Amino acid sequence: MEAVDELIRRFEAQNPGIRVVQQTFPYDAYQQKVAAAIPAGQGPDVVNLYYGWAPTWVKAGYLVPLPEEWSARVDREFVSMVQAVKIGEKVYGVPTAVRSLALFYNKDLFRQAGLSGPPRSWDEFLAAAKKLTVKQGGRFTQIGYGIAPDGQDHHLVREILVRQFGGRPYSEDGRKVLYLSEPGLKAFTFYTDWVRKHEIGVPNFFPGNNGYRDGFMAGRIGMIIDGSFAIGTIQQGARFSWGVAELPVERAGGRKANFGSFWMHGLTPLATGPKREAALKFLAFLTSEETQRYWLEKVGELPASKALIRDPKLSLDPIYGPFILSLGYAKATPFVDETAQRKVMVDAINRVILQGMDPAQSLRMAAEEEQKILDRFWR
Image 1 (cartoon, rainbow, N blue to C red):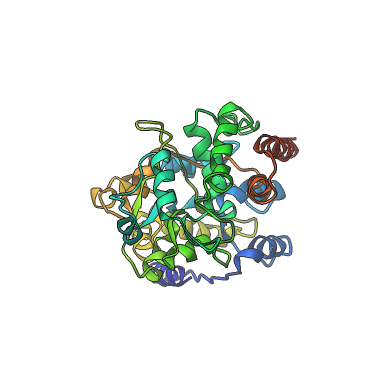
Image 2: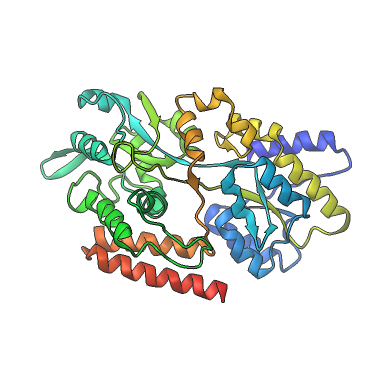
């Protein structure tokens, strides 16, 4: 919010005839409040939303396509994952910044456990996590990995482990679920075994909506997988030496995979006439390289521009570097209803690690449920 206030001040100084008003909502109420306001004619001209919500918003008529020239700009200037803003070849939004995932690790705990550096393979990851896990009197006082199905782990299973184990989560057109396969089951079982078999993670080990991150910052969790958006929070909250590494691979020299995501700026049907022209100017400003540089410094999220992420100062940075390198192979899931699809995978994981269901049965249920979501949308 502070960053946007500053950007509005700069934009209005450059465009004295335009006034921009920022309105914010709590995350949990965001979609409901904004979507309810637009049909009533009281909503925004420019809206900021998670890319995975866009198909549902387009279908409901809450977003309108940007002018045709924006499609060429997306192709020319932005990293490949931003292609996800296109629906039916039309562009419905553009981001200021993008995100990828990486491994955060507590260097102090690593040294105490005799570990020289971050794991490069999942075998090394498991070995390190076991050394970092401490159990006293039947209770865990420290865990090796902050398990978080509803954090970033549902992406870890779907987009990263499935691909690393040789599968694909969806068909090329995004209309078919493909993770119900031998590689998909292997990946899903491998992940849920971190709790069931290896006991390196404990569900709800640390209280709070972001308990895995809070537990890491409290020095009670050795490793977490989180997005580049967490850098600023961890920098402010951690009181120990910590580092960031690219995600491990299935084996030495194995396939790299990552999940990429972003929040995008789009136009609503309320932006008409002179307001539409002003809104498009503001969109261009919000997604300019100047703004992207400021956003990186202020918020910590990665630039969406191809040119900016090629800056060696970024790729060699010990904190930002692993995220920047991951953008080259990160995939943005082609959601049609991000909220519902996220719930499918989170529920699938929880049925196994909390209720003891067989992984094959739980994954089959998830694939059938998600396929129904896709079929309903495309029908």
